Image (cartoon, rainbow, N blue to C red; front, side):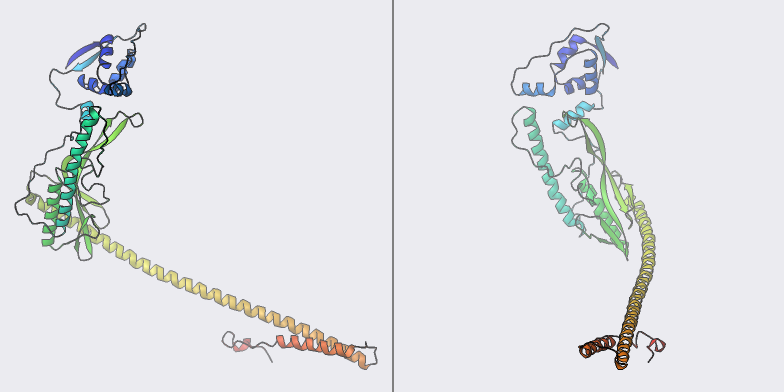
Length: 412
């Protein structure tokens, strides 16, 4: 690899002549490395607002180059290949995103057979994806047009509404459990795989079903099922932006590699990497073996779940029986407490009536013995007798023959 030495004055002229991204990509450096060299040699460099003002037609002045300090680095060596590198630099990838170019991805050339018949479950999904794909292509055209307008400094009043990003998230990538998560270049092959799996699974005793729109396809056999979906592997890249608030952006790109996801009834998924160059008939034996393995696992999980539900039902029945027993004991305790309070109240009333009658009998005995009595004694005597009779009527309680035994009944 050849080297090129840049001196301080030369680098100063370069950073004020071109933007950092363009200059860094030319010398095969990252923007951070170029900024580090400028700071090391005390070279002032323009900010993004400087270039924005130039694009708007304003006249801007350079920051003068200060004198170097004693012992300061005055030059730097940069790599310079004699031939362009096959691998794109980070700045070139960022420039491609700014220009609206589609990121590089593995090529996938696939054409559907003529008069291809879609499964009854896949046909509406295919029509929906065709519509969304056409919207994605139209959105890409509008995005490229808007990016060109913004790049030339013209005011851009038209910003296309972001429906979805087919290159990054796939046509149906924003769903929780999509049947297909693929880019514009691979969604037809992904749908073809799903359709073939449904057709061939139907032939070996499975019944394809969709419980919710745009959810995974379930292959039922009896009371057990497995779930399938097709996904395109994505590659994450961290690129630098011109924003001071968010200097780096994490972007997902399509890779063209298709995986068939097969999940058991417990949502444990196993993925099978498909080879588009190899016919699906050649790979079908491995796929059907994987489906049968996941189905056997689903059967085991179903048996474990049924056993757990049986144990839970038995435990719930015992718990309800214990609740009813405790409730009956509480009701019996409350009834017994009421009976005891009633008995104590009756005994208290009987005691008061007995004391009152003995008192009246003692007064009658003293009167008969010639004792002195008050003028209104007879009237008071009648009133006291009525109070005793009233209290005596309260202590007469009818026994509850259902709640108490014959031995508990009051003695006559």
